[in-house]
Amino acid sequence: MFCVAPAELETKMNITKGGLLLFSASSNSSCMELSKKIAERLGVEMGKVQVYQEPNRETRVQIQESVRGKDVFIIQTVSKA
Image (cartoon, rainbow, N blue to C red; front, side, top):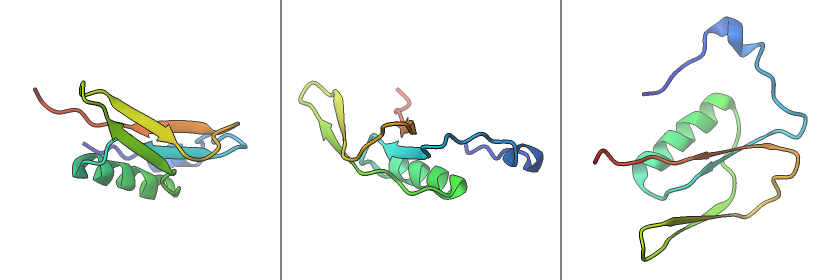
């Protein structure tokens, strides 16, 4: 589900001076698609990130750019189990 904010709220959104960074914490297609749609809607580019799957099914995310002073959001989808 993808939510769209009402037009009157869009002009009132408060974005920090440092900006906004959006990362996808998975390389699967559904997570990448959702992350790209969110980035497109917000008018930002996806951040540079490297994602590793550990043998114990843990996900490790290595952010490859500075996030100092920025609002950071990591998008992660989960399976229906």
